[in-house]
Length: 489
Ligand code: BES
Ligand code: ZN
Ligand code: ZN
Image 1 (cartoon, protein in one colour):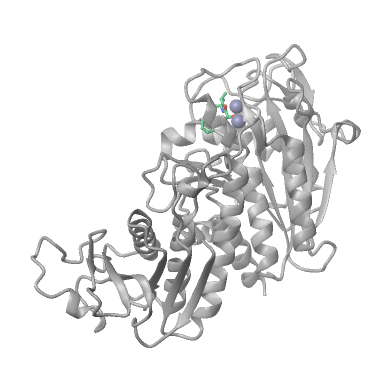
Image 2 (cartoon, rainbow, N blue to C red):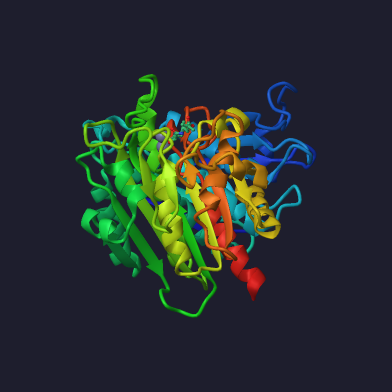
């Protein structure tokens, strides 16, 4: 999309190819669309949740076509309904090759004008995104040229800007994530991080293999040992050294996870290019935080490696020593995310941030538990978990909390070393992984773990994400840092 703007206007009377209007079941229609809604049969459009109706305006309005989207009744309608409405309108425009779209962001259903304007902006941008980097014939791909968000409130301008920054940061992460393992190697991600740092005035540090050895990051080194694409640890810092609330985001960055010597089955193994989602989400978060100029200090820590089988790869039974001195028996080389995160969490803990969030496509078990609907959340800190849950409702990147009782930590004790990287059984796989990570977070540091394995990609049936990487977590984590900083002050 070439441009997206907000227009503060009393009416919906604007020039465009398509006007999109989310409508309530009970409330009447806005005056500008009433003439086109007359005489509809009951089953044609009643305003039920998700119901849509489209018509030409036959030259009788400033907009060429009208698309209405039912928000349903008060019980059906959530803030996300507005994202969905905007996205449905965008999809209609694309399939009918309409180049300019305006979407009504007039408040209704008890939602405020600002929230609605932000949600509509996000719905437009997230649904309009198409990944085409590897298509050679791009001229056949139709794209909307311009979009307009219509709001009646002046204050919505700010909400629109926020929605734009968040969505474009998420799209930035999606674009990187979609690149396959042969293209997006650890070193390549480091280059992207450097570019981002330059553009957004961040400090970027890249630790190569030699440096990782010096720093005793043996988890990252062991996981990366089977690949000729060498591992890296990258840090990005915003407001470095400033006396502000200090937060950290740590993202799992496995550029491809074949499982290593504990090789995965070949079915759907291609999806393991998304095993770097945690790292690219963290990049999106620091991009958004810096563009929103949030009054916080933030460090993003990205442990990057490729997990392949080779004669140089680590093997089941190997014992390694993580940066904080704890030893780990590697019983399954496919439980590699926790090994790279262990080093990264130990390292960031030394800087004593107030809060650490880690984000990772860590376990298949979270998909068994929650499917594609929610992020697994684990934390010992009820207040922090509560804030994340609230932000999940607001951004619709919903989280569901699982327990972290000490019995789960017992399950990760090693026979020949301090810890093992998998437990004896498959029980509670998502929680035992988190219990393992907990061993590497400094005492007194507020910490939460987000398992995003279920939400990392869409199968194409999502209301606003095309098939592929979603970078779910960018809006949730950014919003969480913003709310945490407000609570402090
Ligand atoms: N990257 C995977 C987890 C995953 C699976 C993410 C499916 C997205 C979709 C992770 O490294 C892994 O392989 N975990 C193992 C852990 C097991 C060996 C304890 C798993 O979930 O099977
Ligand atoms: Zn794995
Ligand atoms: Zn993995």
